[in-house]
Image (cartoon, rainbow, N blue to C red; front, side, top):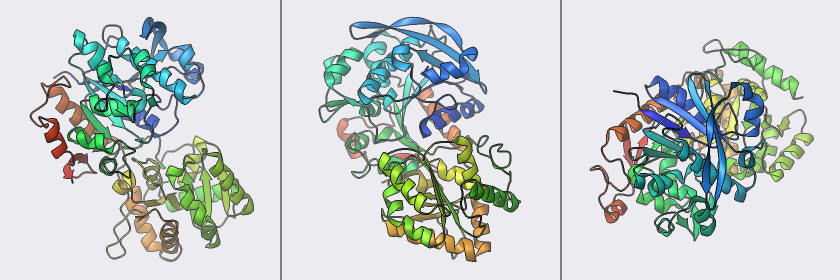
Length: 523
């Protein structure tokens, strides 16, 4: 059998350009898919930063004019190969000649409309690559399954291609007015209805991806279940329930080549289990000295590396941070985000210079050093689709304290004092003092029960957080779609509901993949 050809489409991809976890996922997954036997490639916009840093490595394939309503706009195609993966880049200086990925919301809608149309126009003969699976990621690519139906398959183009749409964060949906999107994408009226793309009278790119993709995935099993509910569904829970038969939760992995304490060149001292104590102590002392904290090996060092936004539970943290410092904890925060949180954290750090440091920036080198130095890693998130930080932290022997939501619930086994099982600590409710009490409990074990703490580190550091398992699950999903004769969205496979009423009746089950357990249904 020929290898399954997969093209992943995304707005950001590590190591070329990164804003959040989306870039890490799309950067790491293709390498592991190739190991599974896929021909996996990636396409993204050619941003100014990429041009400046990798110009000599880019190969120019050619250009074409892409229609955007009444306009025809230039689109160039470049490529490079990195770690065995082919990466394509769509060039247009008006839309992508920026250092940052996201510029201004309304303009971003227009930019990614162009990007989606350009990708579909390049596929096939021009790209010399016709994927079996088009894997779209988040709202910036959410209209592509619809565009395939509306403008390509009806003319016999890309008719066998199937689509996967991955929801990395449901909160960000890509919303704009009907007339503008109708103009940009040249779509007929039948695609603008509440059953299709509209949410509250506006076009919703995320909803379009859910409705028109052949398969929908989320980045953790628990998040697949949570987004079906009113609380986490961000207004799309009804849509997700109607299409639950095609929703799968597959847990993300981390790049275990980049995040490996045994050969990490960015940390002061390397270490590995079981001989981790000396190296980890050296990393902790180096960070305490570097950031002006009291060099005290007995003080629990608590770390957060995060975007400074409300989703990350910063209101919970700010409510009890003073009590944490009073209890003898040292705290380091690394990240940028909302000005309110940046100022509040900076003010608290200035008042407690030997106990707390707020680094309002992003530094990959400092992030690696903090993972290696931390005793405890804090993640009091209100919601967390998957979360990579807790897995990175555990691989470096930093024990997480996290809220039971999304991927945090799927990856962190709470410590059980009767069995000794566990690789971290969790709390259930969005409650600041529940977060405080669990963190204080963890600190007590760190200070006074060394054997228990050593057991937690053992289970954390020996966990498998790599992409190997997740890539196998994606490969199995691709294979099942590739082998199915039901190529068009309009055709219903025998395993799927045969009517809208039956879809509603069967909307609660969600296919999930959790750790190494067999797939099961959640109700």
